[in-house]
Length: 296
Image (cartoon, rainbow, N blue to C red):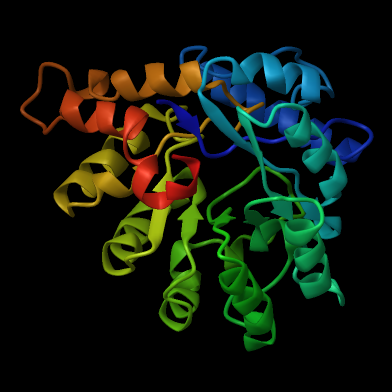
């Protein structure tokens, strides 16, 4: 069974501004170049990152289940209503799993989370300190994380670099999540994109935190970094905590699988270590079961 743990719905100009759209296009062109074309590119204009319910549903046919969310981050010019995600998920309950995105800076963030879970039926939470401009070590947010733990929902974090120039990277390394992992041991958390380009920090953190995982989306575009990150994960014994994800519309799940199965190509013919096919196949088919047992 193939589960995509990370995909988006949003489109220009309804949910993202022109600056976001222009910077997204520039990022898309780089990804296409260095991934050998293993990126999704329905268009190469200000709509390059558009993901409507229709285009998302077409891409989701490559999976058995797909987790989808928007992003609420006024600071960087994007805002996707959780109602849109919930409506879409209700249309396809056997395949689409809707998660919320809530900005912890909002005065009613806990009430919004309660509404998203109890009324809208959303089953997880997307956060991105770089996008939302919040310090994940600020104890003022602890009641919000406690509410997520109380609901029993997982959080997926964007901890890593990103293309919007208004994003604040100083809050983007995975180690900023250590205190949350310690204080909320029952809170399941997934760090997106292997925390790139701070993959070593990410590996060190998920090794010590039982309820922390990482997804492999958006890293196959950079073959050298990807191989290094996967070898690091293997040598530290955490490949069982790596989850398949597309980051659609950045890529499709088929793009990501092709990139994973090609991870060793950059060191072919050398004595450098390689990622065994058994590890690759477990990432594709099995690892999601420990992180997201509710999808079984």
